Length: 263
Length: 286
Image (cartoon, rainbow over all chains, first blue to last red; front, top):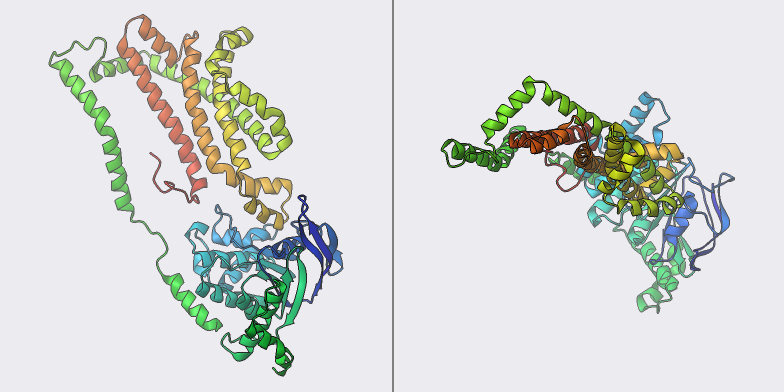
């Protein structure tokens, strides 16, 4: 169980990036955090990862406070951040250095199979496409079997086709170990394709604004009416979070919000 | 949905992204580059040789290649060539090792800790502004006229490029890559060994080569200040006895040694830098 209690972050220059964020995520749950740019969603993820310390509040994983990077928590960044001097296989095995070599090799190989890059094990990162490199980064994060995996806009630098493909890859790999996933994104489609719960943030200071449960079975059909309906709910919540003037279309969604229960 | 994505991806993977470069073309291109590079020096040498043979010049002040070759033969027969080359090589080697050690240590400290940098960098930058030849009189007073002062001067020459290279390389290591190390909870030492060291290696090799170049420059200055052996001594000797062939022979020996030692560093480093994805990284060292 991942529990965030009253997380706040104020930068030295006085900017309040986060304020009073409280959230619990169940084991194996996939939570997507969406919000306009600058709403503090990446700041939140970095606080959960232990890379940055929050100014107030605490992050607890299974009752243990997280104050520094933890072996049970992995993170995938927006960029692949592969080490250019290591082959793909050794990048994937980077977090397994302390394991005996045979075990390391088997686990790396299995993970590379899982992301469909078996034939790339021996090449340098520079020879990979953007999508391939991000798959290697995902494999590197999964191979150490984290309990919680944080993803910070992991596919935002990729083209739409590759992005959908990688979302499927991510769900495939997730299904093996069922870690908790917290994914930060500004892509509503991506949030809906992946998450059990979508949390909309609002900015200045960053707060959790609205939470939308997505009870769609996986694999999800992005063309289905239910998907589209959920998408409208998230978009409406996003609009409200940005204090935009509510448009007619969104108003319509709002009035039918109660009907969300029928599916 | 997933299976569709996979099959499309699989097809893409099969596309020949692997850069299998035909080796023969590579080798012949390298040879051609080599020949093109030789055209001017060889052409000029041949032209001068012919000019002297044809009596257009007596070649007394500018000796033709054949006379330089004779000079080499003579130096080789008497064992002088080996003696002078070894003396110079030994000075450069010791000075290079000392300068590199000091430059690496201080550069690493200054790059790693901003406190150390604030403390030592201004002083070192100040010292760097002093033309190193200016140290010669002081070094002679302090360290005597023999080997120590010569080696010290060479070490000073090697020190600065190495120091600057190491410090700059550490300062410019990508914070994002360091963060990967933090996510995997690398300790200070493991962070240095697994992240910082490989990241600074390309710049480090460059700074070693720059340092070595200066080492060769400074060995001449050092040997000018009174030596009984070494290629620099040979230069002075040739000047005083009016033997231009000896001077040219020594200059050529410097060129060959400098090039060889530089290539040695490049060759030793090459296996560690194969991953580099930079402009010109694929073009062979030559």
